[in-house]
Amino acid sequence: MTALQLLTPADKDLGGGFKVRRLLPSAKRRSVGPFVFFDHFGPATETPGSEHDVRPHPHIGLATVTYLFEGAMMHRDSLGNTQEIRPGAINWMTSGRGIVHSERKPDQLKADTYVNHGLQLWAALPLAHEEAEPNFAHTAAADIPSCEEQGAKVRVLLGSAFGETSPVKTYAPTVYLDVQLKAGASFVLPALAPELAVYAVDGDVSVDGTAVPAHTMAFLQEGAGATLHASADVQLVVIGGEPLDGPRYITWNFVSSRRERILQAGADWAAQRMGHVPGETEFIPLPGHPFGVQEPDVKSTPA
Image 1 (cartoon, one colour):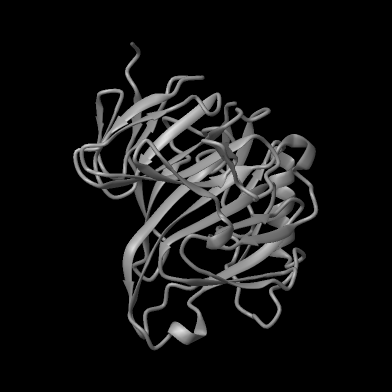
Image 2 (cartoon, rainbow, N blue to C red; image 1 turned 45 degrees about the horizontal axis):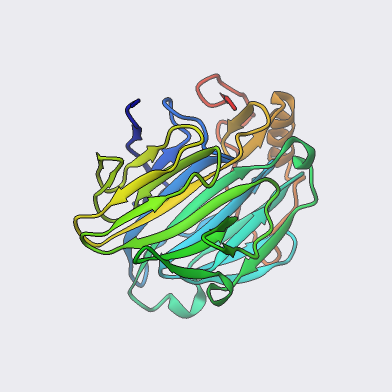
């Protein structure tokens, strides 16, 4: 049997001491299914006066998928959407031809101490939808289907599994599950998609007999499932889907099959032609403006 590919995170500081564990993209693996970006943030204690707001910034060619285990954040975008994101909900923002958004501490929590903990993923849009109209869709926690399967609690965030189907619209076959295993439990994960990966959120797990430490992602063999075993209570996520329909370039917040499209997006943002979040005047400047693409920053993601 071929050994599982394991991926450990790179720690990234997003500013103000707010650190994330970044699994995708990496030199070892560029994507799994449609997912080209995977950040795990927290648990991080937010206190009165802490400033971890993400100012308005743009995206093209992707959908952001935000999921919280704890805490809250306020989403605002250039379409005029305002949505408080709470644990258990799925927030899918299609950037398509271009959108601008911010993620900030909700006003009612500015004087509070609380914990923020969650995941943000990017799904590359299929070629036919790279320039789709931007939109934002919030699906409340109560509307995300869940089930008890082999003694585990499973929430079907995207796609279909174990007889449940998420109401969240995706542009390509996609799988995203939140799985909670009890100590001593074994769980047979079927081959739900051609490409699948298991990420250990808060503890160690065994995947087909291979030890996968906390904060590590295990990529399953193509078209295969796996047997998971937990020696202690553990939370996992499973991600995957159909392979990408071609290579992608990724730089800063832009994803595209065309290098020239990324260059155009950079020029548009530098000139502030991509829209504005109503009521906000701040924005994140284009890194290294005037916009110049360097090879280490623009990567081709193999399908």
